[in-house]
Length: 374
Image (cartoon, rainbow, N blue to C red):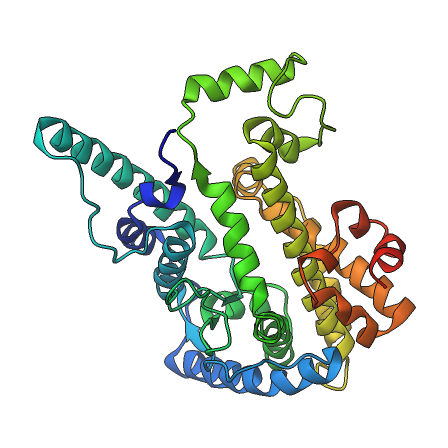
């Protein structure tokens, strides 16, 4: 049986972080006073958002959480590389893995090292691009894992990052009230922190599914292409006879085995729920906390639908950013509909286990989820 190799073990995440920092742009020009004021406000809003999220959702973290951290783009890249290395199986500061002895061992080490460097440089370029788009992020895997326990389990690990230059840039570009927009962003990101803090099993669920996706059982490129071509021709591939999915999901279904594709769907549905739930909370907290919430929502909806140049469209498609935008919309519609029908307390049954998470068809049909779970 071929050895299973994690995708993350083929990426030099230290090089990825260094490359990303070198390629990233610093963000909008600001004075020291503006930066300090933004950081002070964001940290304060992250604290006060906790009460609003708890009151709106009925969820409470099972352990004290780390304070939020305000970062610039380079600091976000460093944190993201460390987290992705942990999640995918190769922390940025991991020691070199042993190779076989003799000439074959030297050749294997050199080849693996070159591959890891190339992949690290590519990952760094993607991190540099993303660093200009991220407003904030709760990272449930910050701090790594101890004895196989995901970082968001009830020992208070996991970290909330707020990317100040991007927040300042967006509020300027959309002509928003800074105080309101900063609170709005914090409400969204703190909701993610509460989601994981109140339901520690979510981090393990993510880790298990990512492990399935990123594991490679030694299939060669030729074998993978043969399976892809056979499937396209209606041949007897591993997933032949299965219902085909459109677009990117269809390609993933052809390239991956059934278990891996199911894991992709699991993560997509979880992401849709988490983002939709956070967007629901942002709007549900309402004008009493964010007086211009309607203006911010309208501005963001326009921003998400505005035309982009061809290069931006290609990069967004390759990185899945447009799919993530659709997650916000579909997820919020699902959460809005269920909460309106049964109330938030009964909606919270969704966090019970993997079996109560919405299935693919249920995102578009909230009544089906209500019938199955409630």
